[in-house]
Image (cartoon, rainbow, N blue to C red; front, side, top):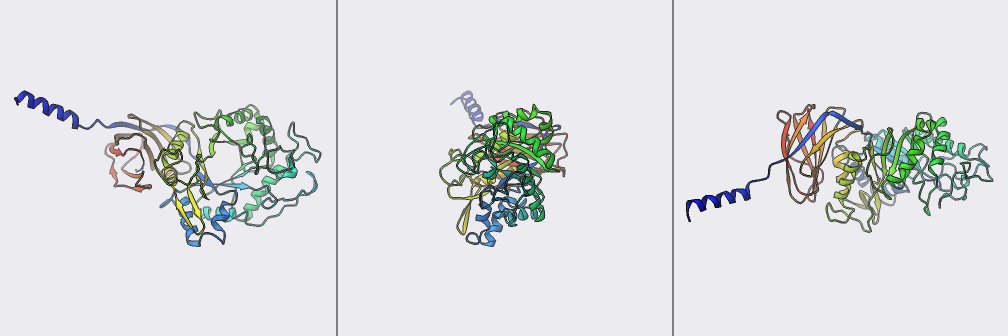
Length: 454
């Protein structure tokens, strides 16, 4: 072999083994986006009772589940709890008709609320101070169909007259009284929602509002809501919520009352922000699926990677201020984060997908500009304590070496927390940030959060 051939072979070999140049990423603290209210979950429809009930989990297992959902050190560090305001004969604070909308109320309070009071008290002990109380329906006697389930509308709304009279103000008082009962138990409800999926009829608790009716009732609730932040309207889909948001925005009085526009992502996913300058929350979602799934990346559409992508899209494309998952812990073929099964439980990678955001992005944080090359899904957040959370999601099939540049922020050390098939928000070796830059590798099909301290 001649020397020229050897040189060519070496050159070709060198071309084959030379690693690709690192992808680049820039984090710029001088370019702020939305403020973050938090991340949360719900245990409505008796799920808190299943967790806390005497026939199920032991006290130690209850604590383990609470740690998984709420601990900032070992779990997801959730910061919002969504409570369900009951409307059935067994869980309503006014289970029977008091005699009409103008009759003195006959409220009852069992101090338990299907163990949601216990859950809220436990969450408060972990530092949670954001509690969103949401009604799926009014009691049946307040509705056009006489049933708390199967749709129907609130009596007294435009187009919804009833022989029993106008129940709008009585329903508003009912919602506020619910928050007063919680205050007696040491829990300050911060946010109140009068409807859940008003565009979807089910054979369980459900009640219909048109966008115009939602704006109408907002103006009834607002004057009696006091310091509560009114939320609307938890539509079945994000695109569908836009119609409710537009109706509220078009009414100056309603616009001034609604603090937060809330939408779900079942009927349609997030493709952009809601049409409002007010706050917006993705307030409920879990993916479709027919079996319990603990996997990170199996292509099912309800694995951990699916959740990671959904949260990233909500924060960056939807510009939401909060992300509230559906069930934290449930039973059977749940798409919740944790499966309770008699006296035991199992954990899905969905929990850790969410934890890579919720544990490190704290209430009051500000999303700041984050751009990257190489197809990396990147977002960045500056917390009120000066720490940064830079979240990198690699959906590709190859590892990505990334050169990070940090501008207009103070940074000394970056600690990566990895979630993938083998890791669950697992701390990796700290990386020194030198002159506002560091280089690190994001493994294929993996999620990393860099917690960066000044």
